[in-house]
Amino acid sequence: MSTHSNTLYVQTPGAYLGKQGETVTVKVEDQVKLVVPMHHLEGIVCFGRVSMSTALMAEAADRDLTISFFTEHGRFQSRVVSAVSGNVLLRREQYRRADQPESCLRIARSIVAAKIQNSRVNLLRGGRESDVSSESESLKSAATHLANSLDTLSRAETLDSVRGCEGDAARAYFESFNGLIRQNRDEFSMDQRTRRPPLDPLNAMLSFVYSVLTHDMAGALESVGLDPAVGFLHVDRPGRLSLALDLLEEFRALLADRLVLSLINLRQVRAKGFEIQPGGAVQMDAATRKTLLTALTQRKRDEVTHPVLGEKVSIGLLPHIQARLLARHIRGDLDDYPALVLK
Image 1 (cartoon, rainbow, N blue to C red):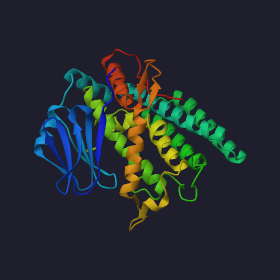
Image 2 (spheres, rainbow, N blue to C red; image 1 turned 90 degrees about the horizontal axis):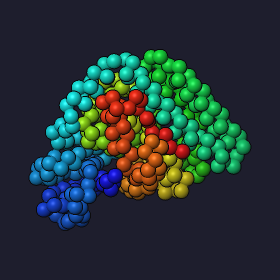
Image 3 (cartoon, one colour; image 1 turned 135 degrees about the horizontal axis):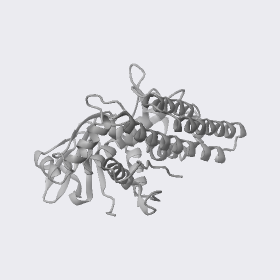
Image 4 (cartoon, rainbow, N blue to C red; image 1 turned 90 degrees about the vertical axis):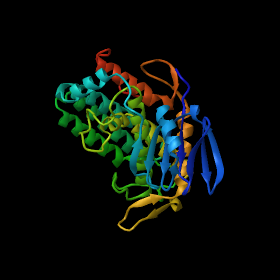
């Protein structure tokens, strides 16, 4: 297994990225602030008013480094990728399966089952760690609800039924989410999951991390030759990375939610790092975004044992491993897609 590469995140307003030999240079006001060897990178993510040279873009394309652009508040704008790689036969089979309801159902059911199981692990862990008996029972009750959702999911015979199970489980999960917060609950809590736009600091952090991870999922899928826009659970829409969103479902609870909860409970983020915009949208400041990105980068270096491979791997490699397993299933090498579940 190759060593996990890094993603370069740049959010300093006015930053300029260029190519110097085999390195990426980051300049601010004509001063070099950072030099990164290209062979250490797997992607570049830019937030807000960040620009770069065409020479760097060309070199990134030659090296299969994906460049993604987000607004300063984390809304995805565009991606720059190299020419389509991978076996054209794999993509043709992906497209065929995406048009077959039964094939979509098998993959979608596996993905949703993993999402529910990972969400349930968070609830059960929170129930064990809570010092308040009423909250502990509430979290355990929500976990039971998710267990029932898994049972219903196993009998689902249509994609709409699978999506219904996913929606019901997500609703129960987020209704209990405040019980997972141990510190700063007066600053961080949610009435419900809100996305476009997020209406409180907690939702703002979750949406931001989900958006950044979608970049990772798309890059991993492209690296094995799959089309990140053609999914099995999410409906195709122009501009939507449907397969990347499919893969993201496995990582929401086990990576993004745990990361955000950890930052809140360790008091590493505070409400003063957010501001309410006209219309009610809540956005985080640059310092808070940096805290999230730094924590995410560190978390990617942690190691876990992959349940299928039985090997210790860095968390940052998990999207690539799952993309490869999905490709193997689509090729016919695996009977089912083994979606990721971690304890």
